[in-house]
Length: 389
Ligand code: NZQ
Ligand code: ZN
Image 1 (spheres, helix red, strand yellow):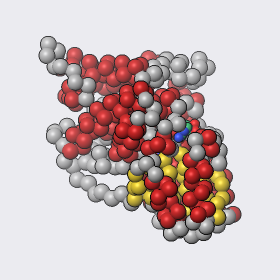
Image 2: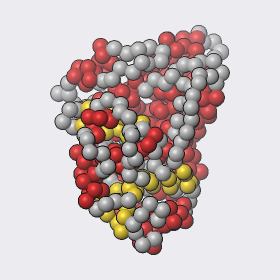
Image 3: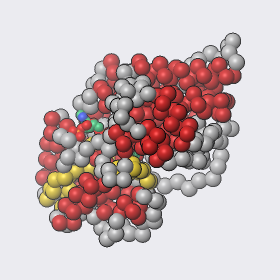
C-alpha cells in the first residue's frame, strides 16, 4: 500500500430518530444563532423542516433562514449566504439537504469570515486555509455525494462557466445527523442519480493504482455490490429501511476518505461531468451515468486486470470461455445495462444537452486529472462527448 495520513473531523450520528435525539443538544454548543440552510423546499413538504425547527426552538436558538440553494450551487449563492451569516452574527451553519446544500454551506462557512475573494483564493486554484471557517453541521436528506463527512465543496462560477470541487479538511462538518427515513421522499429520478454518484465515486477510486491486493479495493468491491443491491431494493420499495440506510452509509463510505487512502484515484469522469454541468446545469449523477460506460470503453484496455476483477468480483461474470479483454469489456457492458435498468439516461441528448451546446468548448475547459490508467486529452474527451451524444 502507498503511504497515507488519515483524519476525519466529522462526528456522525446515524439512524432513525437521530435528529430528534441529538440536534437540540448539539446545536447549543456553538452559540445562540443558527443559520438554517436548505434547498428548494422539499424539507417543507416531507416534515424535515418542522422537525428541525422544533429541535432548535427547544434549545432556545435564534434561527436565521437561508433558503433556495439550487442544484449545482453557484458562487453567487455562496456570497448571499455569507452576507446573511455576517449580518446576523451566525454561530453555526446547519445545512439541511443533499450535496448542493452541504457544499454551498461549506463555501459560506469560509466566505463569512474571510475578507478576500474565496473563489479566487480557494476554488480557482487550491489554497491554504489559515483561519477558522464558521462551524458547520449537516443534516442529510439525500444519499449520493457523501459531502457530510468530507471537506469537499463543488461550486459553480456561472460567469466563468467553471464548476470546481475542492476538499479542505477545515470545511468538514463538525457533526452529521443521518436519518435514513429522511431519504424516503427523494423522488426515484434523484434517488438513482444519487445512487449512481456513489457508484461513480467508488469506481473512480477503484480503477487506479495500486493494483496489487489492497484494503481499499477490497472494501470498494463490497461497497459496489452493496450499492447495486440496495438501489434495486429501494426502487422496489422506497421505504425499505435496510436499503435506504445502507445506501446512506455507502454514500458516506465512498467519500469519507477511507477508500481513497493509498490510492492514486482517477476522477477524470467527474472532471468531465463538472464542466458539462457548468455549461448545461445538468444533474450530477445522471451526467456521470451517461459518461461512465463510454469513458471506460476508452480506458479499459489500459487497466485490463482491474477491469477483469471488476467484472468477476462486482458483477459475478464468469471468466470461462473469455479472453482477458472480453471479460473486462463484459464488466463495462454490464455496468451500461445496469444504468439502463435503473432508468438513468444513457445519452447526452436524454440528459437535455441540446444541439447548440458547444461540446468542444466544454471538452477544452475540462481539467485533465493525472488519470490512472490513461491520461485524457481534450481531443479524446471531445470524442467521448460525441459518442455520448
Ligand atoms: O432543493 P430541494 O427542494 O431540497 O430538492 C432537492 C433537489 O431538487 C431534492 N431532495 C433532496 N433531499 C430530498 C429531496 N427531495 C425530496 N426529499 C428529500 N429528502 O433532490 C434534488 C437534488 O439535490 P442535490 O443536493 O442537488 O443533489 P446531490 O446530493 O446529488 O448533490 C449534487 C451536488 O453535489 C456535488 C455535485 O456536483 C452537485 O453540485 N458533489 C459534491 C461532492 C462533495 N461535496 O464531496 C462530490 C460529488 O462528486 C459531487 O460533485
Ligand atoms: Zn460525484
